Length: 136
Image (tube, rainbow, N blue to C red; front, side):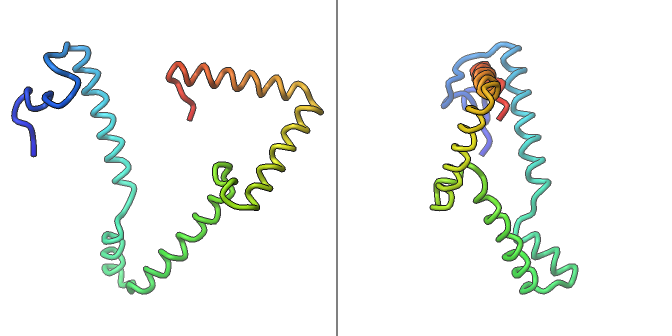
């Protein structure tokens, strides 16, 4: 359902009343960028139905397609467990996190310059994040 008037557009939002030209341009630029990002994300992906349709057009059986989908989904799950945010979910992950922490402490003790690099990198990243230029 599309709003019919400016009043309906701004009725439920914080933007009550009129907005100036700079704000309008800023809002429209952000909306256009968001629309482009969403369209690009959708253009690069296919739904299961679209894959089944393409497989049918290519003469590939549904059983073969399902088998490949199942087998291709498995490596993605196993490779993600090595990411640091997933280390604490398993016992071996706890050991891996402990070894990484001990290696970092040993590196800092052996080379004090490493500690300075870590401290200054943390400070710089903190400032960038506070300024809104997050590198992540």
